[in-house]
Each structure stands twice: as C-alpha cells, then as structure tokens.
Length: 203
Image (cartoon, rainbow, N blue to C red; front, side):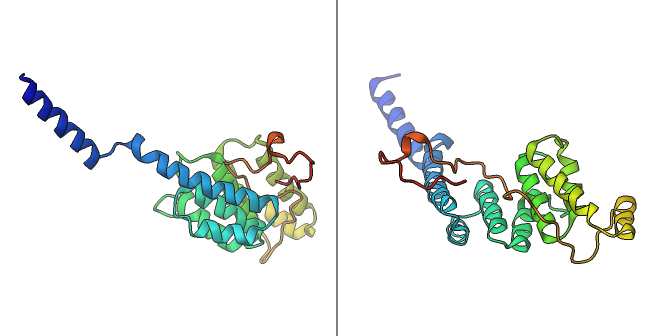
C-alpha cells in the first residue's frame, strides 16, 4: 500500500473513531457524573438530610445504582410506599412478579426492607427467600425484625401468620436498624477529616 493510501486509511479511521466513540471513551463521562452525584448524596447522608438526597437522586436519571440509592433515601426519609415503587421498577422483571436474577442481592434486600416498612412482611419474606442468601447480616436483621413482630401478635394472628403467611391489615413492623444498603461509600475516611478533628461521622 502506498504512503498516500496509508495516510487516507489512517485519516478515515481517525474520523470514524470520532463519529463512533467506543464504550471506554464514553464511560468516564457517565462514571464521573455518577461519582459527583454519589459524593453529594454521601455528604447529605452524613447529615441525615434524606429529603434533599431524594431530590438530588430524582434528578440524576434512571441508572440502577442511582435508583437503588433513591429507594434507600426514601426509606430513611420515612416514605416506604414510594421506595417500594422505585425498587419494583428495576428489581422485578417485566411480568411484575419474578425478580431479575442478575441483580445484586443488596438491591433485593432493599426491596424486601421497603416492603416490610410498607406493612408487608409476607412480601419481604418472599423477596428474601429468592436471594438464597439468608445468612447475610442484613437479611438476618430483617428476619429478626419479622420474628420479633410476630411474637407481639395475638395468638390467633400469630397462628394465621405462621400457618398461612397472612399478616394483619395495616400492620407495622418496628426496625431496630437503619434501613437500606448503599453501594457507594458514605463514611468519611480518616484521611478526609479536617486536622482539628471537627467533623460529624455518620452513615
């Protein structure tokens, strides 16, 4: 191939790369945007300002990590019904019943927690069972909350729950833990602390 033809091929290849950027060229922009969102949300979480975090995440798009964080912040803001709606959109398949097998179990545990907070321990148990990871610390906490709640029921209600899996209408299951799992860092690292040490550490 002549030097002239080689030059033309090289030029066309360069132009083609501009028109059709590959995945690695696009991802830093998306990753950078998500990192900025998560840094802002992590700061708000440390301040327990979940309402503001919800607003930031609602405007950040429909990436699954962002939707998961939105669901967690809604739970912590005391808005479990909205959290259930968010998790249902990406945890369940198109049939609205079965769970997406490829998703992280953390997202499914979050969905289970939202269902529990909404007053559906049977739904929470069903979602947890599908994860096949019942020994995970958060799954153990969720199951423990359900067991404690069941002990508080009247004999007949407890029997109906144990045998038929039917919970009382408008039931409330108290949680002794902060609901939800983020999949990004929310704790301030030691090296990020001001030298005078004055900083509120919170998850």
